[in-house]
Amino acid sequence: MSEFDVIRRRLLLAEKRAVNEGMWKQILSEEIVRSRIKTIDEQLLQLEDNS
Image 1 (cartoon, helix red, strand yellow):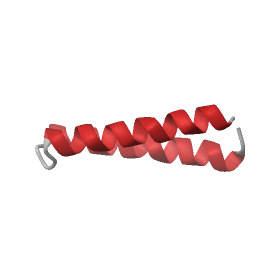
Image 2 (cartoon, one colour):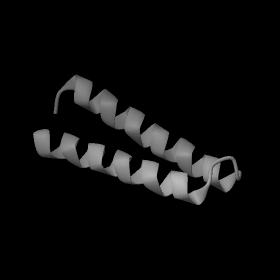
Image 3 (spheres, helix red, strand yellow):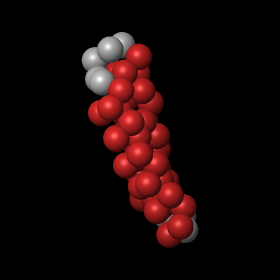
Image 4 (cartoon, one colour):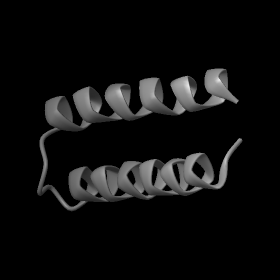
């Protein structure tokens, strides 16, 4: 995994935590969070597949 991929993975995980926190604080709806988490998880899987 390249240094760029490591950074990208960390950013995606940070975004995932932030989105979950947004739902917990009732800033974001569960539907939006589910959709975004699904997209983030897909991007994380692509990073893993490319390494």
